[in-house]
Structures are given as C-alpha cells and as structure tokens.
Image (cartoon, rainbow over all chains, first blue to last red; front, side, top):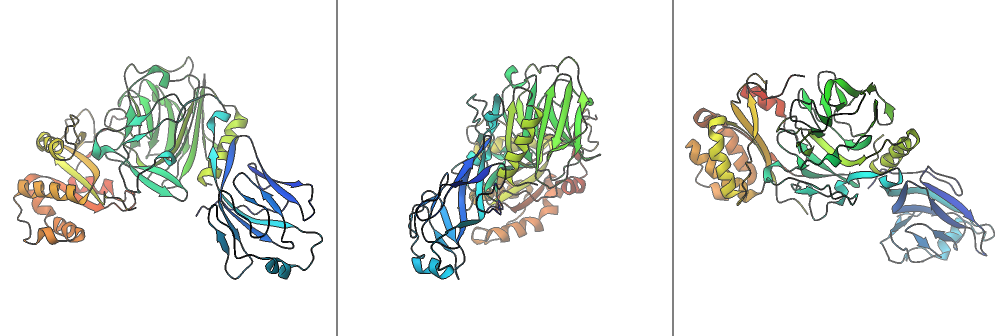
Length: 352
Length: 142
C-alpha cells in the first residue's frame, strides 16, 4: 500500500490538498466533507476511520460515502479500526461487521457524536494543466496491460498534443517497474530509450520541465531526456548527469558554458524541475534551488535530432535508472506554481 | 501476473560479429524489422573519435527466446550443450552458460551475462562488465 499517510483530526486541514470541513450537524451528528484544492484532486484508495461516539453519521468524500452504520461504501475501501481485526469493506460492498452495539460500547452517549479520521491513504493525481500550457505529459502510470518486467513499447502523451514516444526495437525497450502505487520505466543504461522524430515545437522557448527520476550510476555522462544534437551538444536542450561531480545539469546548446546544475543523489528517487526564461536557466531538485546560469538570446534549434527519453540522440549517454512522470510546459511557470508542482508531485510520488 | 520476459541478457560483441548477429535478431526475435538490435559502440579508449572495437546490448527475453538465442550462441562457439538441455530449469541453464562463459569468449569473443528479470529492475553492474572486457562507452569529452 501507499505510504501516503496523513494524521488528521476532525475539522482540521491536513495538508494543501485535502481539507476536512464541518457541516451543520444533523440530528445524528456532523457531516464531514473533503474539499479538493486547485492543483490536484484526491483519489482515495483507502480511508481509515475510528467512530468514537455515535453510530449515525454522514461522511462525504470524492470517492467515499457512508451514511449510517452498516452503510454501503461507494467507490473505495473503508477500514474501521478499533476492533480486534479491522473491517475492510471492498469497493461497492456493504460493511457488515459493525453494528450499533459496537459504537455503543465505545461510548454510551448519543448526544454529541464525533468522527475522527485517523489515517488517509490516497493516490493523488497531478494535473499539470492547472499551472500552465502543457507541451507534453508522460506518465508510466497510464500503461495498462503490462506486468512488472515487461518491455514497454510506447509512452503516450496525455497532453492531447500527440507527442507520443516509442521504441520499435524489442531489446531496446525499457521495462515496467512498480514502486508503491506508482509505475516507472527502468532504463538499462546500455541501449534502452524511447523517442520520437524531430519537430521544432519540441524546443519551446521559454520552457519549464519536470521529471520524476532516479539514477543508478553509469560512469561519465548519462542523459535522462534530450532534444540535443548527438554527442556534440551544441544545439537544443537536454539534461545530463555527470558522474565526476555527481551533478544533474540542465543544458542549452553547450554543456560547459550554459548549464544550471544541482547535486543529484544516486539511487534516490527525485523530483526535478528546470526552467528557461531568457536569459535565466534554473534548476530545482526536490524543491531545493540549485546553481543557475544565463543564456542570452535563446538556444539553437536542432534541425533534425529526435526527442529521446532515456538517452542522448546518437546511441550514447544511456540512462541507467528509473523515470516516472514527465511534463514540459511551453512557458516559464512562476515560482509559486513551481512550489505547487513539487507539492503535488511529492504527494503523488511520495519522494521526500 | 508475472512477466513472461523472465530473462535479461547483456552481451558484448566484437564489431566484426555484429552484422551477422543483427541479421539473426531480425530473423528470429524482431521478425520483419529493418532496425538493428545491436548498435551501441564501445572501444578501449572510450573516446568517440576512435573506431569501435565492440558493441553491446541488453534486453529482456522470454524463456523460448532465450533458448533460441543460446542455441545460436552454442552453435557459433562450438560448445557442446548438456544432453538434458531441454529438461533443464532456467537456473540450471544460466549456471551452465556461466560455466562456459570463458570458453565462449575464447572462441568467438562474445561476453554474455544472463540475469533474472523478475520485476523490471536492472541490477547488473554494467561498469564492472565493461572493465572485465577492457572496453568503455564511447563518449565525446566535454
């Protein structure tokens, strides 16, 4: 199960994403409702409750509705604790193990009921269009019909712009891995990548890019994503890990003179955001601001090089590690929303 | 459901054997494909301006694909497989391949590693494999 555990109390906000509101008490007690904040929406996988005083209550959430003792759980699992064995109601099924006597035993008073939410486990969805204009958006969670270990043929662009990625050669496909509630692609560092043909639209200026990724350490250089020219790196944009100083670099045109960089911990899953807003090149890793750089006058378009995920563009600089969600906005996202992006992605991917 | 691609094969191949092996892949694994499977060059210096001496690749295979490949390798290296090959378990086959690894290197210069692919994780120590074979990734100095 997920590690997304939030300790919350009645009527208190638990984080930026889910807020528990008090509704006017009914005859039998308060009504509670989850409010979804702008930026992402909660999809509850499991809700853990302890009913401390009263058998009758209403709990309305985005996917859970429980009207009374023994009620039907709509949408997701609901677990009652406080008994010898927690009772878990499967989706759409009726909880049968809880009765009035159970609640009466907890508290004989029926005058002032309360419901305490002890834990919440959810898979939070990330909606990048809430922050700006999305150029492409890839999420391995969307891959269906594949088992962990299967080679992955393609990664669909869910922005609606059609910038899908694919790998035609069987042995060069990354494999699917599962990490908690999420799926990632594992690139072998030898020859795995996904790509698509060049289009100048894939070289936005300005731009903001976010990625969820890990690296397991090939020597020298490795690129998780690249829209640069081959191994020369004199045109286009890309990211590169450099083992000599253990940094991840955001590069435009030239890896030595034009790069923003930050130390990148090997084997740890990270959220990376980079932003180019002429002339500023900036990088954040797990919401920590790195070393910025400047590039005046924009970067040079590659005339034909493909967009490559998991390597450079010339059968080189292969990435050994995992890549999760990736979003490119064709605008410079402001600082406030970059903070919101980190919050949303961290809630979804449970990274730091 | 567990993956059918339960084997990961990583291999370093001398440059002069790559065309034939790529042709074999097109005829047996990526049937109908015009794309090469083995394309990533290596050499002793690690400088991309120097000619590649070897190529390498890594991919996941089903048991039947792996049997097919090992059959080809055995034939090329003229290594005699055990009589009970077809009834051997995957682990037994892996152990046997490991036992003849040096013989295959000596005869055809191909270095082969087979590991389990259970959940997609790649655990091979790739840099160590390269060191053992005395070659490096070809990269441009930056």
